[in-house]
Image (spheres, rainbow, N blue to C red):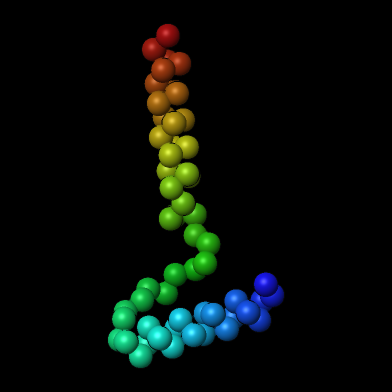
Length: 55
């Protein structure tokens, strides 16, 4: 796949959503705020810290 194919798909999807009056959020393609692994690792570090401090 090249970037032209991806752009074409994006444009087709965008036009469809607009034609069907489907609301969408403007959101970047990559955002760490939406990365579940980032939140999971944070919770793991907190649990690990508690475990080590209770030994």
